[in-house]
Length: 215
Figure (tube, rainbow, N blue to C red):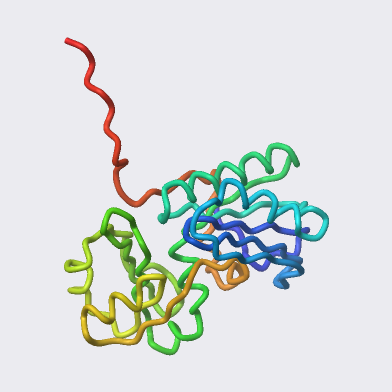
């Protein structure tokens, strides 16, 4: 299912809490009428819903769009759970998008000029999530979770994300743009980036493994 990010059919609430940023925005067509963008590190569970409530009209919208990761495991779960709960309570549809695509959208003009870029964000446990994007912000490959020494073998002149500066410093070349997911960049997402039935995209297997059944 493809949904236009520039739709004018009612207000849209956009949420992303997959990074150290807690970001929400309310859109009327392509215009952001209200937003909150707090860099909080931790505490998304306590901060996200109050942030939405601070928006005009309590954030009430005709549709909800949420970043599904990858990123912080807890942040991804919190954002998706909040979107689903609000959609159920308001009786409106919920849609998802990749948080890495939203990072790319936040640097859309620079990526277009450069002919593409590599998005690099914190993945936890010493790893980075990486994904290449084309000039039109379409993905050039799948998301990968890599150790820094493996990630820097990827050859991209422009690197975007909250680990872009660390990537370029380690590799010793390239241009870094430190970009966090920002709900206000939502309308720069390609329509193909939006999908129905949002669910967490963790980017790698869970750290915890199920206990073996007793013999």
